Image (tube, helix red, strand yellow):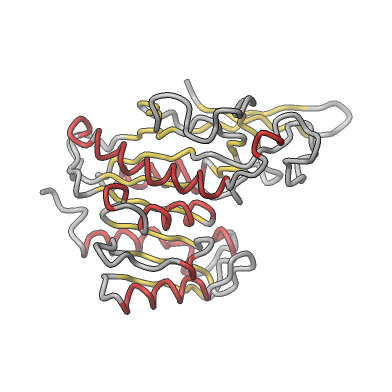
Length: 293
């Protein structure tokens, strides 16, 4: 079954079209039962389409990994967890999710798209609403909770689950990487700086939210790839510079790309940000993660 998102266009009559995403081979829950902290979340996840026509997931209650395996003959024994962005209210499932997974597959890398928990969005609110309005059924169930921390915990658990399945997937447990975008970048940094068993072996923070606050753990920080645009209007570029500096100061391998143009989401085309995945591929190759063990 294909993942689909519906968008309704207000004309004389409403017309709905479906945006389809390539289906995963498997869906792997992060937790055996209800995710800790979500016991009172009673709403349902939904797929919608952004005003720009991009498929998005909202109201994730049950965090999962969507598994996209590399072709068996080309697999290099490396896996990459992909954490889409979306301001902790949405998950941009195409260009920060499934599209990245497919690019990883082309490199022989197994990919796992992470659907982490999100701040509640009212399904009846206008498309541009930030959601979670007072008095809306469901919103009160998150009162007093830091959903960003829950999302970070999901990122850490994703690394544990990927390692648990490594032998089954045919990848090495010491070759589990993680890439995240914007809010998903914050999820990656929560994993990269978290407990030892929940850290990826390498990480990529792409226009990551909160990058400037991350500090490498003294007992084994993962190598880091960082990319951002100088004209990023949402998170700016300074945090990425600070992240680079912190990793360099700790003598941990790190690479930084600040592209002249690209804006947040690398949505402004025509510059080097258009080919940031080529730079990531080079970095992965230099560090041996694209070489068969």
